[in-house]
Image (cartoon, rainbow, N blue to C red; front, side, top):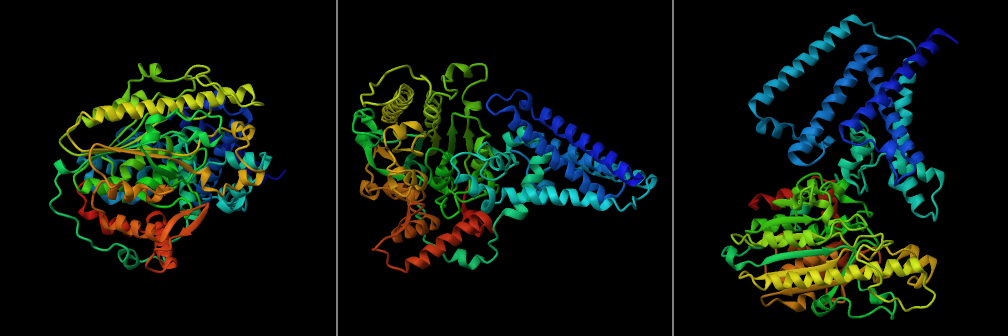
Length: 617
């Protein structure tokens, strides 16, 4: 074995060891050692995740060495980057409850303006010291001239290219979705660090992969995978929003409270089979005006609230989970519009603040506050409100709604997301046998799952009824909008009841019945109910419908969404359905809607620039 080869192997072993400890220490800093103790995932899967994280950091060290060509200097630069990024992430999570991401570097100017002078001085001293150390180390080392240096470039090129390929929407992701059982390649692909369509959110991804791996993955994903929208101009976007004049005489006493309750997996279970009792949810049935056409089936809650709050479209964005991949900057929303006309806006969820990146997303959507389970109850008392399945009961959520409604200085906009009836249902979280399952040929496990789910529906109805009784005591006009986010993930229950006509129907889900959830509306003042009385209302068209029903004027943004709705019944995976009553070219309107989506999520976000300056948030 030649001298150069031996030296190269020793060097790579050193880099690999440093990468291993870098990932290990990063996970300790972020309070996670689940590699050794992960019960939910197999030990092999956890090992693959850890190994891939190490491999990415290893390739990054090689890339630094190729650029610098000095060993000690390369390791110093790597260590400095590792410490600095982890420190910035910890501080951002401490003060903003959000993770540090590559796009934060674009806020350099804003940081200089807002940062305390002492912090700026200490930062300047640190940068100067860092430069001096690099200078002295560099002076004492000789540049590597060995031909093996090109192997140091080949390693990151191969690893990072593989990462980009396996994360591409058109490659393994699409392939694996079509498989009934996961192949080995799909298991490997699922272990690759992901920053798009990752429901656990950035905070949990950092705990799983280590911060440096997450940060590199996020950077590569943003640079290589995101779609370009450079062809969309500001003029194109501004032409969509007619400058309709909002009434200037609106005053807070005249504006109604608006409460959205998005109930976890709530559905009309009688559609499963005629044997299902029809009086499980009497309050919801009484006030049901229509159905919401959800963009998701069996999961993907964040995509539903994304459509409701922004009126953007999941289908047009290839079912990408925008909460974790796109909404990392201020975005026009129902919250930001209502803020601008005098509302106080609150997002609520009786689950962790980091899932789906909600702590970051709600801030970017303009909410004044986000009340998560961390704010609802102390950690010491939390166990009293956690059910057998590990989900918080909705008592916490409805108590928070009641507390927020005590604020009478401003009209309240509350967007509350429940969680207690979350799948899976193979437990007795609400007790046993509340409902007798009479259909023949049904297994005991299906009876248990269905009993649990139906009891959860019943409890949701009771909570809705209780909220109505509370609101009746308020002086301010108030409207409550209750709907399910998606059909439940009942798995074998669907199979045993023959809910799907065929395997093909189960895979494709082209019928709206797989996406319809009850929409119930109650108000203590007269509303335009006809506005809501449709066979179904798509989630992306719900906001302007509710505003119109409550006699709240539409902003230019929601006037455009209403115009799109006048031309299209829905833009959904079950089909794009034009309206006969549209008075303009439907193809043009659809293209304009596509352009708006592309601008907000992938472009320069002219929509926010045009509409937001007048907002008072």
